Structures are given as structure tokens and as C-alpha cells.
Amino acid sequence: MACSWATVAINISGIIRLSNALTRVEERLSKLACDCLNITSGSTYHQDTITMPIRSDWIVTLWHFGTDSMIRYTGEKFEFTWQVAETVLVRVYTKDLKEKGTRIRLERQEYPNKTFVEAVEEKLNAHC
Image 1 (cartoon, rainbow, N blue to C red):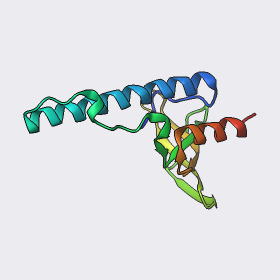
Image 2 (cartoon, rainbow, N blue to C red):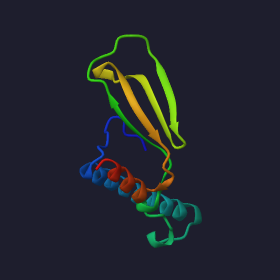
Image 3 (cartoon, one colour):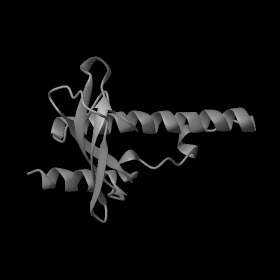
């Protein structure tokens, strides 16, 4: 799931918005799976027949937390990466933001490998 153009804030409002979006994805995936079974088997399945893990149990394998510079950057493109911990990578690079021009982005990539609920709780508690 990518959201470069509709970023999610690390606050209660942002987490609620993300949770709602993941719920819609869960519902659509479940419906798609049911529809595919109905088409391929020729029989009628009920939505309850498909076991789709609820989004709160999904595993967060990677997420990015980033911020862009306020001013345009007109120098050469670059990218620097540092692994600062076993599950954390930090990147600084140039990114073209269409109408906003090229900006410098500072980004932290994390690999929590935890359920959505566990990962979100950990992230929110880290910012308290």
C-alpha cells in the first residue's frame, strides 16, 4: 500500500484514517476472492466461506516515515542510505514532487514484522 500523495500522520486521526482504508481493502479482497470462486467453480459461496484475516491481524512488514524539505532543491540528484539498526534504515534523497518541484526527503524505513495493532501501538507509544 503506497500513500506518497495522501500521507498518514502519526496521530490518532491518521491511524483511524489508515485503519479505515485497510478495512476497505480487506472487504474488497474478501469480495474479490468470493467473486472469483463463484466464477471458477460455478457454485455459490457465501462471504463467510472465505477466511480473510482481519486487517488488525495483518503483518506490517515495511513502512516508511518521511518528511520533505520546505524549499525546492535545484542541485544534483542524490541518495544516501544508512542502516542504523537491525530493522531500521534511514535514507536522504531527492524526490520530484511534480508541482512542488524537487525536494530533499528524509525517510526512515522500518521493518516491524508485527501485527498492524502491535506495530501501531508501538509507533504511537514511541511518539508520546
